[in-house]
Image 1 (spheres, rainbow, N blue to C red):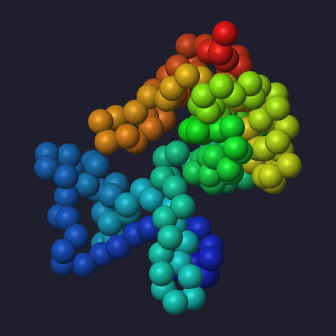
Image 2: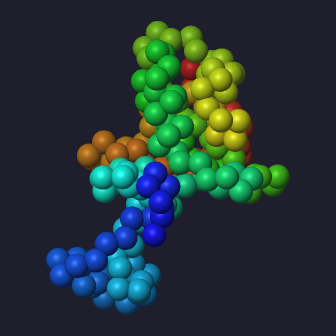
Image 3: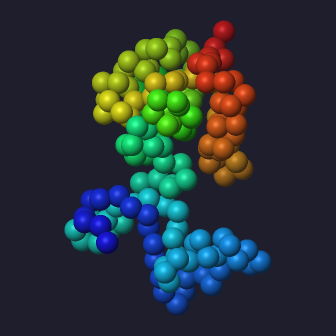
Length: 169
């Protein structure tokens, strides 16, 4: 059990929680550890017992031993007046284990550069949280419901090889 405000994986139990994944014994054993259903979501609980979801556990970036939640970095990037959409993923890094990579869609007509946005975000985030790698792109991969597909961004990053990319002419 964590103290109020500390982040951890959300786990729950009760008669209405699932019994398991059909035909997937290993996945069931992983999700239902110790009689608790482990959701894969990271959250905090306040003093009144209200839970706030922070991010997904599998999306968390561990940079130099520090936990970085992509959603937090994305929310900060989205406050820039020239940013219309942002997605953050962890990419392999020899020195820190993982590095923070942001993919950003800017507002129509914007001339914002990756270097300018990186410098701006450096002033808004803790030193270990701002994205060292940043690509300005025309669009982000999404599913039918509008959820950004981070796995496709990670795959694209592996093909590009970690270089900064701008699709702007």
